[in-house]
Amino acid sequence: MSVIEVRDLHKNYGENHAVRGVSFDVEAGEVYALLGPNGAGKSTIVEILEGHREATSGAVSVLGFDPAKAERDYRDRIGVVLQSSGVEDVFTVREVIDLYASAYRSRRPMEEVLALTGLEAKADERVGSLSGGQRRRVDLALGIVGMPDLLFLDEPTTGFDPSARRLSWDLIEEMCDGGTTVLLTTHYLDEAEHLADRVGVIGEGRMLAEDTPASLIEGISGTVVSFQLPESIEVTDARTTFGDVIGADIRVSGRLVEATVERSTQVVHRLTGWAVEQDLELMGLSVTRASLEDVYLELTSGEAATDA
Image (cartoon, rainbow, N blue to C red):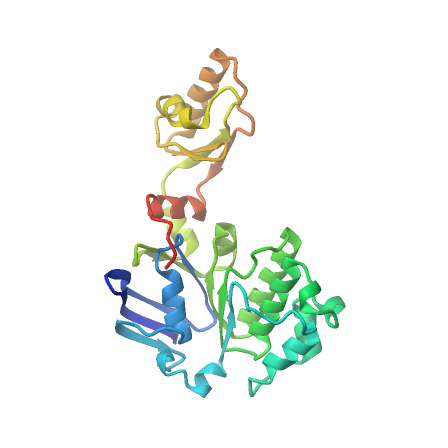
């Protein structure tokens, strides 16, 4: 059974076509990750599904409702974790959770919400006194307090330390085991790979690819070779310096050099031989399997980074 059905969705802002004919389904109990660079259209799609924007054309059904009508029965069955909730700093954590809970017919018990989000020790402190990561936990608490059938998570673990991220992943998985469906947006590709049953990659308002993380990764042949750029080589020279040696397209992030190659043994042999001849040390040299991040980078290469 599909909890979300999107068919040929379009959204225009004057001459700007933010969403161009996107279609996808999200099944009950599934974690579906909608990925894409800033400006790709994913935020617009999610806002239409939440009922905050109206589509220009196309058909959208969420939990059997038209979200554009913003019916009470619909609102009562969804939870939303925005990038920032805008909660007043003067409220205590307990007060703000209780306030948001009052909007729902079915409510998760206060102590359960605090325990699930790791906020027990902060329950009676004012929101304004919390760290960024703790405020993010409050946002997550507000999203789950109504026991939603469908939970929208917009960058839910931004600002979390690694331990808090893992606890949040456990919470999301536990909710899905209990029947909740999750639509997730995140820039953490490892998060999407770990949590998502299926992934949709959006670019320039279109669906570029959609499948399970494993199937998308299998679609990329090759192995990733990476290393830290030696201090004697400028970042601007990395592609020309290593392109011929590696024999593949080079990606540079900071001083990390990466390339997806077909015959990793031969490439590493050429690369290390060249480094020895040049008396250079390739720190952090590693050979790994392709990941969802490699799929994402291949699909979205050249995408514009503007908000939409």
